[in-house]
Image (cartoon, rainbow, N blue to C red; front, top):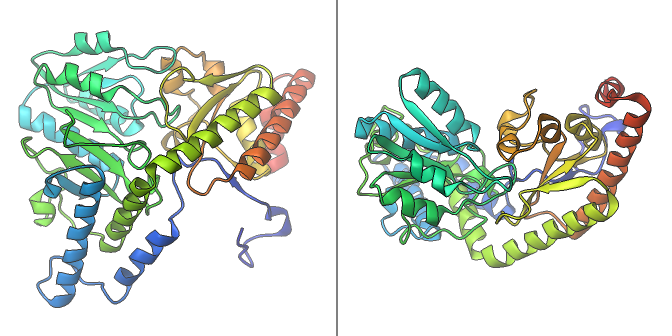
Amino acid sequence: MKIMKGLFTLKHIMTSYYFDYNATTPIAPEVREAMEPFFNEHFGNPSSLHHLGKISAKAVREARRKIAACLVIDNENELIFTSGGTESNNAAIRSALVSSGKKEIVISAVEHSSIRSLAKILEKEGYIVRRVGVDHNGRLNMDELRSCLSDQTAVVSLMMANNETGVLFDIEAAGAIIKSKGIPFHVDAVQGVGKVSINLRNSLIDFLSLSGHKFNAPKGTGALYVRSSMPFKPFVLGGGQERARRAGTENVAYLVGMARACEWAYANLAAESQRLKTLRDRFETLISQKISDIQINGLRAPRLPNTTSILFKHVDGEGLLLALDQKGICASTGSACMSGSPEPSYVLKAMGLSDDEAHASIRFSFGRFTKESDIDTGVAIVADTVNYLRNLRSRAGNSQTVILRESKG
C-alpha cells in the first residue's frame, strides 16, 4: 500500500484486502497505458474537423468497435456511450416510455437503486410500476412475470446479475416470455459485462446497460446497447454527439480505457471466471468450516463466479464491517449505492430474510487482482472478528456497534 507523507500516521498503515469488486474495480495496467496518450498529445475534441480532432474521433470509433465485438453486436452503431450504468438505465426506460406512449413498466423486486428510484418517480408521474418477486434463492418468479405483462406494458427491465448476491436471472427464459408479447426488453448488465459471456446477435434483448468501472476501466464510463429496430429518444440533450442520441463531448481517454478493459475481460473470460469461482468456493468452504451459524444467500441459484453474500447470525453487519475495516478487509453490506442507509437490504428481504438477517449479511466480491493468499488471510480475519463480536454480544447484549464506533473515534 502506497503511503503518502503528511496524510497518514503509522496507525493507518495496514495491508488491505479488497473484497468489494462489485462496488468498483481498480484500473488495470494495460487500461491505464492505453489511456495515457489521450491525456496529452491526442487531446483533440472528436467533433473538431482538424487533425487532432480526427485522431480522437477515430479512437472513439475504435472503442465502439472493440466493445461491440466483445458483446457480439453486429452493428457497432447500436452502442451509445454514456457516463455509466445509471444513465444507461434511465435512458433506456425513459426512451421506451416516451416512444410507446404507454403507462406501465415491469421490473423485479431486486433491481439496482438506479431502476428502483426511477420507478418511484415514475409512479409519482402517473405511471404504473409492476414488480416481479423472487424466490428464497433470488431466482425470478417467471409465472409472476407472465401475469404482470399487458398490452399497456411499455418496457420490462430486469438485471442480468444481482449486485448484492451475484444471483443470475434466466434472461433467455424471461426474454422469451416478454418478447412473445411484443414488449421491449431492457437488461441491466452492469454486473454481468466482463464476467459472463454475452451474445447480443442471438439474444432477445432490445436495450442493455453496462458500466466500465465494474471491469477494471475508469469510473464515469458506460454504454447503452439499443437494437436498431427500436425507436430511441435521447435522454441527454445538446449537441449531435453519438449520432444525436447522447449529447456531450466524448470522454475519449476513458472510452479508450473501457474498450481495452472489455477486450481483456473477454479474451480471458473462461480462465478468469474459473479462477474466480475457485477463489469464491474456497472462501465459502473455509468460512463454513471456521464459523458456525452462517448462511450463504442465493447458494442454490446460478451466481456470478466472483460474488458471495453471507449471513452471519448473531452479528450486526455494520459493526462487523467496521471491525473488518480496522483490520484491512474491504467488504460491503450490499450495494455501494445504498451504503449508509439504515434500512435492511431490500434484495435480501425480497428473498425472505428478516430485517435482522438482512442486517447481518455481508457481501464479499473478488476480482482480477485477488490472490489465493488473500482468501486464506481474509477468512482468518473474518472468522476471528465474527467470533469476537459474538462473544462481545453475549457479554454485553447488542451494543457492539456502539462500542466499535467509540473505539474507532
